[in-house]
Length: 220
Image (cartoon, rainbow, N blue to C red; front, top):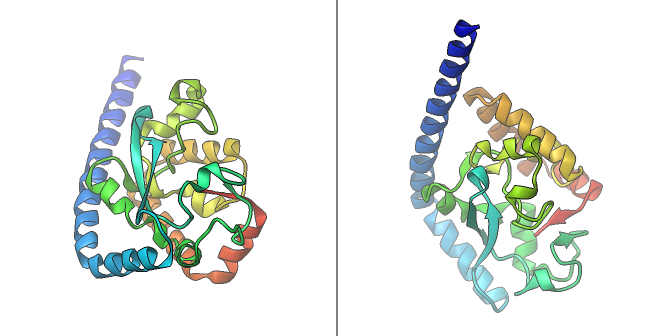
């Protein structure tokens, strides 16, 4: 029994070290990539400014590591205050008239997520992990998640994750949380690499992307 407890504690320490390495590598990688793609970021920013009035960057409160709130960054793809218009957080189709012309292109190619490199640099996110939910949905505040669901917050949120490559915008929140918990409990470098490749494949596979979009609703 004592040996089993020691083994369990050692395994937990190893996982914590793995996570720290994952975060450190992610921050360095995000910094280098941000410098590398800075001309692209500038071009996208100019396109947004010329296309519609409003800020270039959309900020929104999200729940992060162990329930801590932070501001997530995205390129603005919708009209200003879109959350307070029409269906609120829900986007029922890519024909939603709140989406701007430039925004439609950015969303289709997932380029609106690029500013989240800054979230990674700040230590709030990583490349792969459960996507951070808004503070009031699907539950109002971290404290209202079940103990099982809170496990999804034991790794920093990611730009992409296992639930994203498996479900895209389809599936219920309960299904997403179950997959997120599965990821946290089975985390490994190889799993992260697999998810990154699956994400890249879905981005460049237009047919798969479109079919997944039609199966469910997406969020702002």
